[in-house]
Each structure stands twice: as C-alpha cells, then as structure tokens.
Length: 218
Image (cartoon, rainbow, N blue to C red; front, top):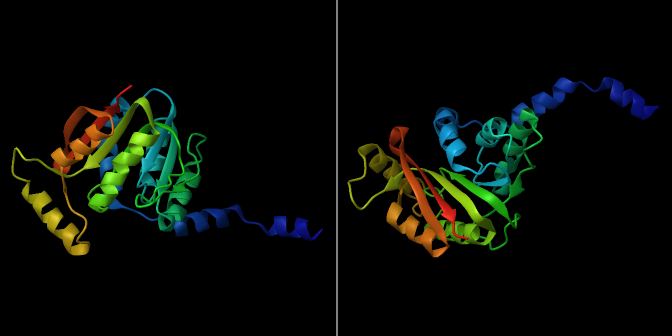
C-alpha cells in the first residue's frame, strides 16, 4: 500500500529536471558536431562498437549515436564527467548507447577490452603527453584489426607555422595546465605507427582543426 502511494505521487517530469541539472553544456561541442558527423560517417566502420575516449559533457555521444544507429556507442571519461554523460544519453533514449564508463588514461586498466573503432575528440591537447602516449598504447591493445582510430582537434605541423588562432589556443592551454598544449602531428603519428596504426587521412576542418584517422593493421 505504501509503495502504491509513492508511485501515485511520482511525477515523471522530476526525472527530466534531475537530468537537466546534471547535464553540462559545451559550446564547442554544439558548434562542431555537424562538421564532424560527415567525417565520422565516412571514416567509421559499418557495424560494431565505437569506444569514445574523453566524452566530456556527453553531447557528442548523444548526437553521434542518434545519427549512426548502425554502431554501438560506448562513452567513457573521468568519473567526475560521468553524471553529465549519462544524463545526455538518458535524454537521447537510444538503444545503441551503452552506459558511460570510467576511463582514466593515466591508469593501465581500461574498462573496455575490444572495440571496432575509437573516437577521441578535443582530448589530446587537454591531457598530458604521457596521457597521449597511453591513449595510443591502449588503442593498440583494444582496437580490432582493421579498426579505425579517429581524433579531432588542433595540431602543429613541422612543414608550416602554427595558425595564429592555434598559437593563442596553445598559450591558453599551457597557462591553464602546463602539461597540456597543441600536439605535434608528427609525434602523434609516430605513436600511431608504433601501435600498428596506419594513417588513412588527415583532413582540414573549420576553425583550424583537423580530423585525422588511422586504421589498425591486420
């Protein structure tokens, strides 16, 4: 009887309000999602599990999984970001999104043992260089042969000066955290090759960003 009265008093809108309170919002995610989606559509496999590393607010996980329903989306991030990711994914209400898992690049254990693709957006310039090294080592372990690793963000190239907007961005990153910063493409590509990842394409994107993806050797 008591349980019945509790159920009668339950207001479904309260769950939506709770989710809204948990959801964080990133203007950059909102701004770049429509530019990234066509590239992901071309780069990612036709089926399988996509491991997203550094899911952030969860906006990308909710948006991309809705448009790529032939893929199973597995968001991950540090524990502090999981409530927002889960709130965005719960609002999306899609069967092809798995519950967000904790993944700390500085720890050896990953909660996912295999994936058909890895997506990592605006993360390599945020984490330390050690984190970038561990990112590629982990992808080398879990990515299936023939699988794709996709990264998006600003990169520095030995063949040309860094764009003024990215120079400013690099200074802002390092002032915020001295171990972060815009990464050298050649150093990142070396890490990829060391982990059996072969460069497929490096595509210019709006705002002096890049979409870069590799395929794991069989």
